[in-house]
Image 1 (spheres, one colour):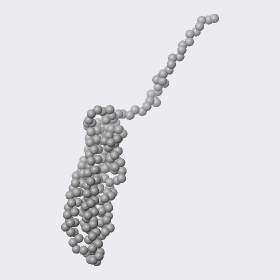
Image 2 (cartoon, one colour):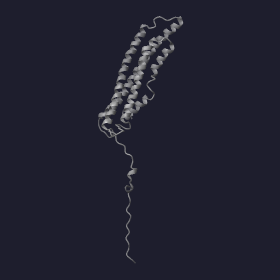
Image 3 (tube, one colour):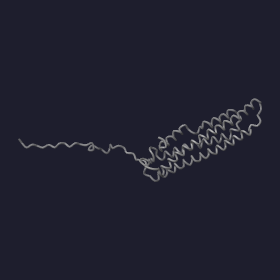
Image 4 (cartoon, one colour):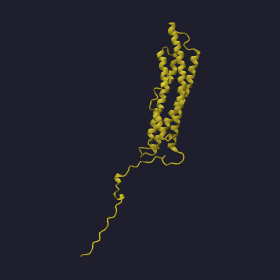
Length: 223
């Protein structure tokens, strides 16, 4: 018999030996907020504080809107009473602008001034978010998707801040128009239209709350 031939036992192949980089899992760039301890700083801090301010301002607006609706309703009732009296008498009723009506108009005007301040602060938040976006793009010119929190990029923040700000700016113009004209309305349909328009706020779109809630979740104000 010839000499025995020694055979080598095949070495056990590990899963790493079959690793192919072309099929590696996708890795996402971590945002600055992830795994961060302590307080936020810089752009992330500005946007997070801005989201909280946005929420607080919309809450204050809502309170003022309810107060304003009550004033407008009182004005409408006085005007409708005068219009009804005019119809029954068959001639124009006298004293279409009684002192009580003028006092309510003054209260409404003061309330609108407070709404103007909220509008101005909302516009300020819009400008802040645009500034943050420009700064981040300037500092990270090679990065198209700059994410400071979870999924939103900085451009998304600027867009949402601006959309909400524009809604309230348009709504304020409508309310100013109502305030200037409701006391001079001479028919029931016009008065009722002004009253309903104030309450329903047509320029504050139905998705506003969703946009705001999404921003609060994104910045971890809410979970």
